[in-house]
Image (cartoon, rainbow, N blue to C red; front, side, top):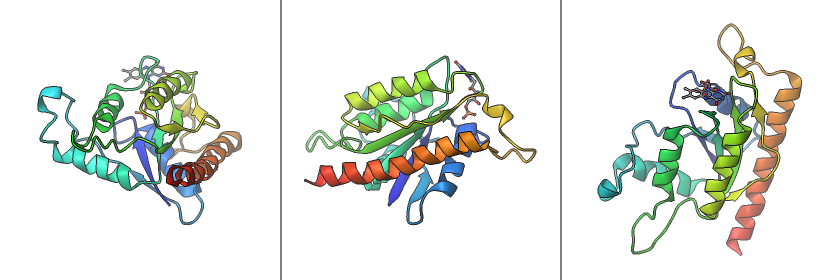
Length: 190
Ligand SMILES: Cc1cc2nc3c(=O)[nH]c(=O)nc-3n(C[C@H](O)[C@H](O)[C@H](O)COP(=O)(O)O)c2cc1C
């Protein structure tokens, strides 16, 4: 099983990227999770949508081949970061206007996120859920790991060091998503 992870933060030391790496280590054998690099995706402008930039083609291909997409959602002003919305806007558009293929349609998606504040990314996750549902993506309703005060959950080496309860929550979300993705993909094939 091949999962694509989309971290909503571009920064190298992103807590959400560290969370992706934690999830990677928790996934059952045979399930792979890649950290999709979209740093080179330009700001969306309908005037320059075609020819499709190479970076966007690459991102869309990775999603097309994936069995599911896991979003790692930071919180910016109680919403999702602009870079994440931008890449989602690109992905939401048809690959071309002949086939009208949209690579996210029908895909299973899972949400989790970490923030330095107290609200644990609940609001941005719900914003994102609403965008994705509109795009006909199957978003797992629950569980959805939320981590607040993440800056207190790193060790001296800067690695994420989650307490047992938080780690259990993350594991539960990751494992539930693998099962959810299997079911959605089976249904999509009918
Ligand atoms: C523009 C901006 C807005 C932010 N707004 C919030 C916020 O509303 N709530 C919150 O808890 N943290 C907020 N933060 C702090 C982020 O939680 C923090 O920068 C976090 O590290 C971002 O995720 P990352 O580590 O994956 O990059 C904000 C940060 C930025 C740069």
